[in-house]
Image (cartoon, rainbow, N blue to C red; front, side):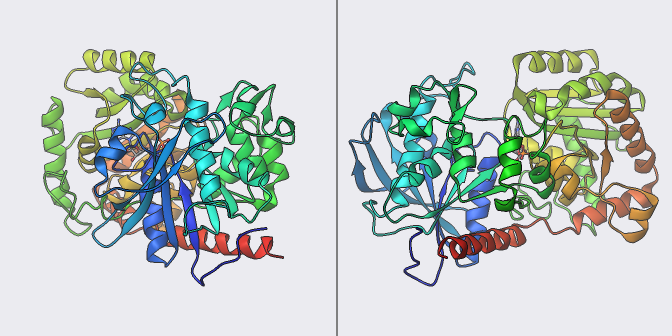
Length: 498
Ligand code: ADP
């Protein structure tokens, strides 16, 4: 039974393991700031729950302790702090922080140590996040504020719906958002008792996954509703291979599964005001974009040439992102001729191969290993076209940033990329919808053919301008997506109250 709304407005607890600008490893960090802010603008009382990593504690001012939380299964004692995250000039999002020094206050990333190894106690670290999320979402909460809906994100908060399922009192409705099904939070079966879940949950109809337990499966199985971050990805995950083993479960739950495309932070990613750019520009002043191209070429040690086609790519170096394909086509890309900059970090082998690539093609290809927010903005503005050869992409943000920056993207036709990029064809040019380029088959040959297609249009200046302007005119703001989430929360409460 969900909590009966005590007020006419909607209250939501948004549980996340990362939030921009405090700590971000990928798109979830962006979403965790922008979606709650957009929901607050629609009148939804949404509050965040996040672990107290050092960056979170240092980045949030005026923290106040609201309660102590001790004696929770085998979890170490923790305190709950509250603060406000200033997301934009007009919106602050209230945040609850779990201060548990033994689990969260350490150097390294949120999921891995500095050497890139998963933290050995990740089950406890994110089990505690999920457990406290469930406590705050039920009538056992020590707080006066109660959410009607708990919005969980990826495996790190996947256990919250399970804890709520086994709680017999009054509780919030649960929504499980899938940002990436490839990360499943898999741990040994003994973890179940350590985390205070009943043994009966270790079942195919429960948290069991091929003899082990999966935090993500728990969320997908027990949540009242599931949302994935694009309509195409919502369909793709109901079949192999993109269901990553959960396709049967997801297909069975399709009545309670929607896809809602992510928006972008249209203030932070605005070429007219972006402070990371050398020169700001708009769709009507596109000539100013070239100053960014020059500055980027100079900063990267590439040959400064305003006319050469310049590709950019930014992202995590993993199998998912298809950078292996980019490595294969890069030599031919330089012969088009074209230049390339790649910014990213991740798998050691890809980092090495990328570094070698830049050494082999000085002046033509530049590679920067690491996470560099400023450079990523300058690449969006300074490159002519943005490459995303992802094998799969639940939503993707960079293809939206690049359309907004007049940098038409070339993307693999999958997930959110397919939902947000309109392929440049005579028909889409004629109806004004063309905004980038798609390739449908994940082979170097098809990718290279699409790269050549970009080159042809790039040198047809009037058509290229139309493509740039079409992309820049699109509305990628969070407003429509936040409104869709609000509708789902309301429909969920209505369904569960019957
Ligand atoms: P994912 O969440 O799968 O990593 P998204 O495209 O949804 O991919 O979001 C990635 C976000 O992280 C984007 O804002 C992107 O610019 C940013 N990003 C990824 N890698 C880097 C990097 N090395 N430097 C700066 N920003 C990065």
